[in-house]
Image (cartoon, rainbow, N blue to C red; front, side):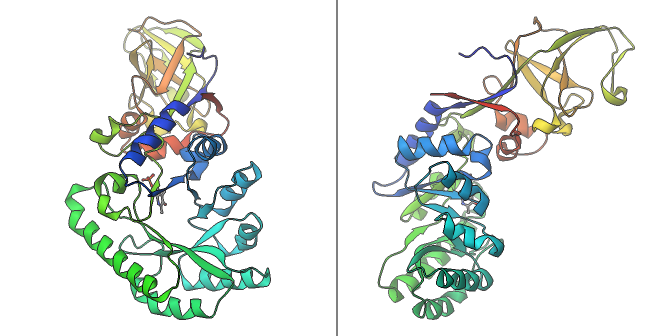
Length: 369
Ligand SMILES: *Cc1c(COP(=O)(O)O)cnc(C)c1O
């Protein structure tokens, strides 16, 4: 156990390894694993997490959302293939410079990338074709298949390394039929490509919940993000996973407030009785939304929940510790043991993903190996 003396995000590599192995155990041998490390590795530390997944766990692929994220990983020495899920045309030349593999999701970016790859004299540059099977977010439509195949015949500068789609509601039991239709559509698309191409692209469709709920949709590779970081969008899977990131801080100062006194900006909290408060160096600029203010969110101090009082400030929060034995310098857990990121996120009607990825880059990352 580390002695916490400032706000830190602890990243537990044992947990990461255990989650990776659990997720992998849900797949058939030979199924590749793509680790999603976008948004700084779901707010953890993309470089350290990617290094561990690459060097210790031999992950097959990485994915990031934007080209900048991939360039950052390459600059840090990541050599595993990186799929860029949502590239923009303006950055395609950098994608090639950093050996990043774009997802091509419409005619506009397909043509732009084919042109750029030709200009740079590339042969069979790896690209990934994204199909929309219901999310209506990004992707070619299934009826575009023939036209894409026609185009591919004339192009030697790119090669379809993978074909993929994305599930709409892989965690929702009441959307099984919709998901099964997505899987069926994806299979049709893949069959058309397999018939027409003289090589076999990697096929992939599932995110973390898809891995758990739709084994029939694992195809050649699974994509996992949130599961690696310890959440499974379902208490049943949460139990098998271990949160990788814990957000911790300390008590900077304790105040004894008398009845009628207020705490924080705009006097949002007024003490109805004598109250003891603790000030903690973490605020909305660190990812603690103002929505957590005024009793909505709590932190854990010496094993007990201390509600946030008044408004969340940019760099600090004040919490009620009237009933908690504590001192200045004591450790505070924002999420981690005693309160998971999922539980805290639920207090403001959001999901673990949003809370995790909101943790500001100014918070120090410490690594438990
Ligand atoms: C973010 C993302 C994932 C990862 O989803 P999780 O639910 O975190 O496993 C997978 N595929 C695509 C296309 C994504 O955008």
